[in-house]
Image (cartoon, rainbow, N blue to C red; front, side, top):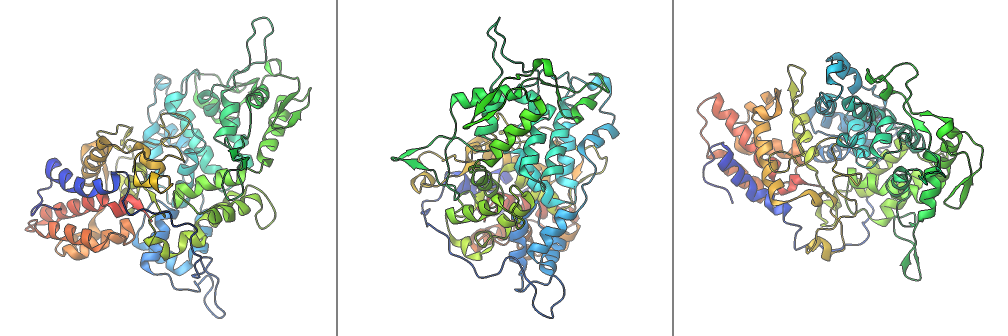
Length: 572
């Protein structure tokens, strides 16, 4: 599989790593089977304390490997310090600590601090990619960043689609990410309202300036947001049981809404526009404020959808609030959103029982409140299906790590930093040369990939499984990812002045087996099998080791090969 020697250059390293990566990118393993329901574990994921034990001490000792696996699901990095913290606190208390951490400097404020609100930059996207990557890589609240990124792939906007907004796209997009971050541990109903009154969403799904029916011209309210609010952000297309399975009537799936429901709901999203009361379009400040209702443009007549009616004469604000209450009360919201969050954090194919358990928490937390995202995230990550090591051997468990997550896993695990605080990583959407993915740059409102995507003509399809992230995998993206990561690992110019800290690895460069073992833990939670680790060890051992440059070359090569290993690409 590996060449006898590795000279760390774009040609040989890409070929060597490509052999490994192609195993995970070919569309699935021939051994994939549908194993049905997962078995319950008895390892007490809630980590209750024993009598007489120190406060928050885990009832069952957590190994380094188990802690690393938990961090791979719950955060964006695995570090020695975080492993120890998980072992000392236990899973539940670690989550509590993360959720209680104060947010770091907002993306908006960072843009202002860098002078990106200068009028000359009004019509550019300058600074957005930098502020997005900076938070994802540098902010200490790893759980909040992971959940915010997951929500950005459910409640989707793209900076490229922010048109007709008076400019300041970078600030509109930055504030949208700040909004998701500020509410990712709050209530999903509140989040829906904040998203529905954000300037970014009003631009992306074109309801900014939406006006009521004009009998003279025949113009009707724009239906774009009404459709996607139901289809993608709340209830989905088909009626669901609480375990996420589709409701059938006479063997036919039942739809959740009709065209008439879209038309009725669209009437609610009329009359909304920028709040320019304390500023104008010459500054980006209006993007930080919720939309303002213009009564003359709002449809004041009755609006009916989902079997209920918004009465005539309500203000635009009241109509919006009532409509969101109707949507949020729909029984589909819990399984529809819960399943997608499980997919983003833990596994692409959660069992119906797993979805049902999380849906139950979504429907009612310990106080009986619906939509508590803090409780939902804990339920997902502490569930027996997420925590039991037995699932490591199941071919229907786990998920492909999306390219952004792989990059962030490397950057955060090795304390990558921009010495100049410029974070010039840029737009990494190009699949042939970069990651094929970049924060808030989805090609459509359907995200980079669909939650139900099935690779055609694959073992995954034959097993009736889904693999969402495989939708953005191609021959070009496989090679592009490897080459990009090879450059990033070695500190090449394509990531600005972003540099990782490998000081803790230098002493291991003379010991290939120890070096690869450390990387296996910190990147793959010890999931790379012995055949592949031995191949990587032998390749690293064949490289010269005469000076510090050689040691660094060994580290670069080992990192690149581990980042390309199938067991890293597939998170279990």
